Length: 170
Image 1: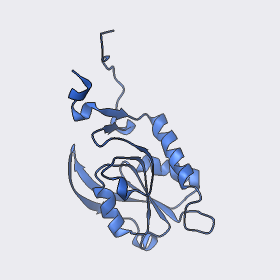
Image 2: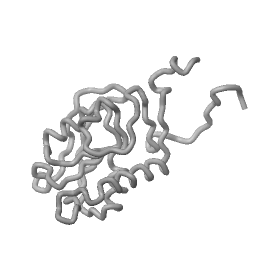
Image 3: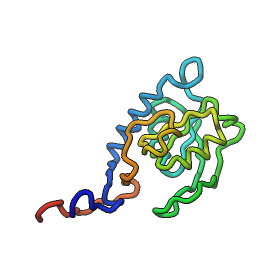
Image 4: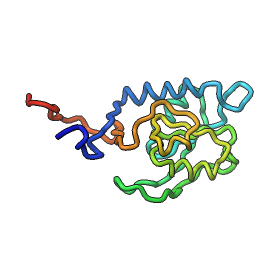
């Protein structure tokens, strides 16, 4: 099978726990001092569940942000994208129009999820660890761009097991 004949799920970018931790810390470094407060701090972090929770935890630690909430948005049904819908919103009084709020997700793919959240909180700052071209306009800050046809395998979705080599056998 030639590389161009790979199925979409076979064009994978495997992210380890170490890698997501390093990339999330790099994102925190980029966001440090960029908040609207006089000292550059952020009022709160909102993680888009579920994928944004691990990066948000790391970023909250690195930036010493103690107020953390979640927004639950469903935009995938297994491997098919559907229209995004909010299942649980963060505290409305804290959020306001999003000013001072750092919204974190692991990945922006089509941009539908972030577009929906951005409509709700237009002044929030949106940051993802990884970005694909279609969703890239919805993100203010990110670390790594991957091609639209790459499937990212996050460590919370994986189990360790043997993988056959590309050529030959063991």
